[in-house]
Length: 224
Image: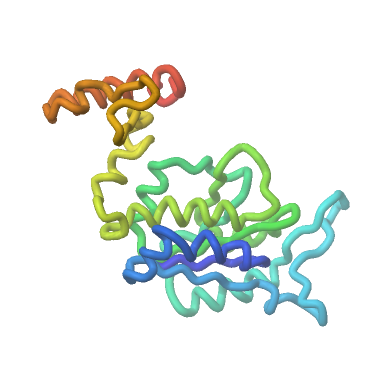
């Protein structure tokens, strides 16, 4: 899979994409992430990428020309399965969307800043708009990093035990059950006996029951 990201502050993406599982995915050749700096495509001697809003109002808007120039350059090199704009008013991102995106080959992310991007760019290019929550960030870079991470870990071969990702929270619209490791007893708290008994069927039934109970208590909306 290849993911291209357009950003005005590409430095924000350096650390999240160059460590742990994301670095491993890239080292294995399973994921390629290219971050493109929008600034060189800006206008005038200051490489401006934003301007005041028509109609007045606080906050700047990212201009059409720089974004279109870079997007057109990338489109000349490859077709994208989705061109994604990270925005607070987009579809709320969830595991099912991550699953679907992980099956694609080429994705392009546009990171907004200020009051966002000119609406005409959304109309001209964007095929999918995503939000990682009902709050506003300074820019789309952190949201892009979150989504890239959630997609990359699903790619076959990225995680050593591929069944691990399939049993994550939200994969079956349930929260994950409690998990334990050694020691079996810690500060008077013991690991449930069923997990130490070796009965695979009993363990699976316990985990299912725990997942359902935890979801009913903490996220009953998922059961609807």
